[in-house]
Image (tube, rainbow, N blue to C red; front, side, top):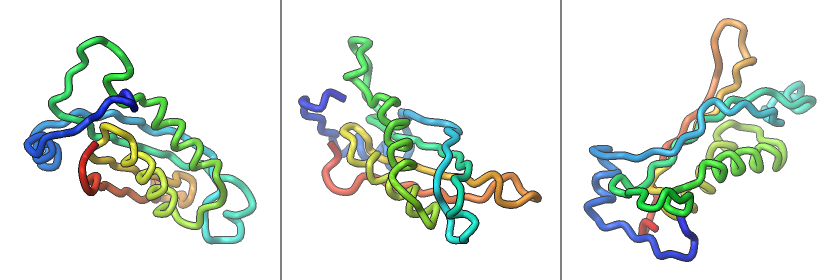
Amino acid sequence: MNASAPYQLDPTTVTKALSLTAARRIFLKNLSVLISMGVHDFEKQARQRVIVNVDLYIDPDGRIAHDSIDETVDYDFVRSAVMNVAESGHFHLQETFCERILDICLQKTGVIAARVSSEKPDVYPDCDSVGFEIFRVKAGPVS
């Protein structure tokens, strides 16, 4: 979205988005990052692989009129946000990591709701991964 342009959603659009009767979604799927994460001493010694997924729900009735990136949410923003958070320091919990990404995403103009998940695929040999997922609708006036 063009940061200088006002972006307000009418209550009907917000209701549709929240009920998921209509949706437009920008997503980042299976981004693999090396991150310092975990509560155990051995987890604090080396970075580990974490798989991150992000869904950003945007105006379900929005249309792209001019084929311009200014008319939507740029997914480069999503990847950069994840990478910056991943590099920002040690996280004891996946929950903290995901909530930090979610907060950044919900501050972005044009985002109505967001879902963030992380998975640690190398924790246990007898399962694909362990993880956390959070979904939240933007509080207050939607911009």
